[in-house]
Length: 239
Image 1 (cartoon, one colour):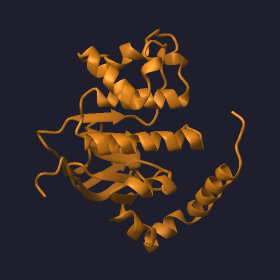
Image 2 (tube, one colour):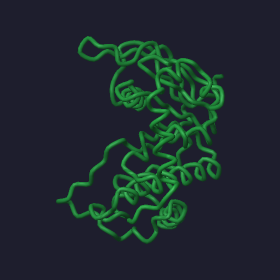
Image 3 (cartoon, rainbow, N blue to C red):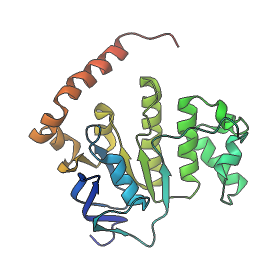
């Protein structure tokens, strides 16, 4: 188990007297794809921030492998409309990257045509792809993606998840992705962690779907998710 890229042991975090994270432990192994799911307010983004070292846990231990190279996409990112920065300048901000590598990565993520566009003019889907491209500039062996498809329509979500899946397979980097989209995450994940302040259940997607705690937590959402999913695939909306 010691070849894990990230190990979280008994992580506890309290905020204003409320337990956000309660004794959370898991490992992220090389090449693994873990999806972190849980209701709103379950502590998912807090856990990511603890893993990234952005906030300090109250107790417990995070171990990061020396070989870890991290790529990260934040949950909310709004370009400053008053700072005229192009996509290519944003990709290389604070880092030296070979031009050929920028182009190659932009081809992978499908943003070549956007490289000279102002960052502030991008659509939600374009911005997510650019954030993913920037996360890849570090040639990561760990990608942490916090709700990457959050503001996208169903087609945009499908495309982005497909892209993440391709990157995982081609580059064999470990991925830890926070997601709400149950019907999508089940396909590619090697493990699903279901968080509600503590880890309620974890395992292969098929096993999780049969887990009682999982079904209790997501009862309302399951019906709703499947309904929206059906709805979108029965007819096309005009864009």
